[in-house]
Image 1: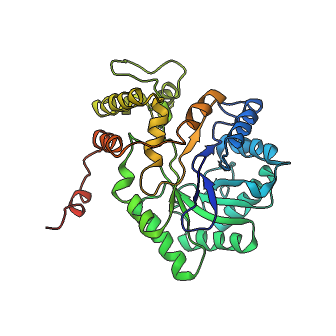
Image 2: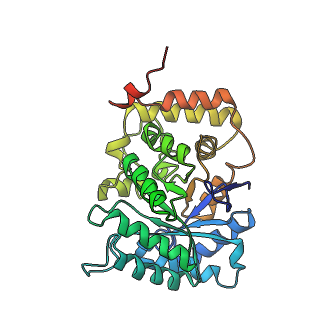
Length: 333
C-alpha cells in the first residue's frame, strides 16, 4: 500500500480508503471486524464513515475496533449534514447541529478527535459563513484536524474555499465526489477546482454499486437478484438498473473486461487502478460487504496501467460535455 498526502495538508493517507457504510447494514458487526483487521494488515490507515450510516451504528463499529489501537496510526473520517433524529434542528449544517453532531460522533468513535470532518452535502438553508466558521472553531479546539466536503457542485466548492480564505479560516483539504468509469461528469468542473486549489479527491462508489465489479455483462436483462443494483432499482437509488442499462455502459464494460483479461486482473481491480491513476485522485473509497470483496479490491495496488490502457479506458468512458463545458474546452489556435 502506498501513501499519499491529503491535498495540501501534511497528513498522509493510504491510497485506498476503507468505506464503512456497509457496516451494520449489509455487513453485520461481527463480520466488520475481520475486514478492518485485513485492511490494517494490508497497510491501510484511512477509514471513512458518516454519522448517518445506519444512524450511527457504522461509527460505533469503527469506534469499538479502534479502541485499543494506536490512535495516531489511523486517519478517521466522518461526516455531518443529514437527519439524525426527528427534531427540526437535527439536520443540516447550522452551528447548533454541527456542534451537537460532532460530540455524538466523537462518542460513538470513542476518540478525542476526528482526522477529517466532512460536510456531507450543501445546505442551502444555512449561511455558508455559519458553517465554515463553526468548522474552523472545531479545528482550533482540536476536536477536528482537517475539514472536507462531499457532493458539492463546482460553484459551491469554489465559494466555500474563497470564503474560508477571505476570513482566514481553515479551508477544505478534500472533496468526496461520485467518480468512476461510468460517472465522469465531475471532470468538467470539480476536478479543475480541486487541482487549482490543491484539494484531494476521494471518490465514492468507485465500482458504482457493483456495475464495475465483473457481475454485469452485455445481454443481461436484469440485475442479479439480491444485488446492490437490484436493491437500487426497488429503492430508486442512483445506481439502479434502469439508469445504467445503456449502450455506453456496455461499451465501457466490454473494454474493461478485455483489458482485465489481457492483464490477468479482476475487472474491479482495473476499474480501481484507472481511478488511482487519474489526476488529482488521492484515495478511492472502497465499500465492501465481505472479506472476499476486500481482498479483490486490495489487488488494485502495486501495479500500473500503461498509458495505452489508460487512454483506451478514457476514450470508451468519455461523455460529450454539455454547454458551457464544451465551449470552455475549445483549444486556442
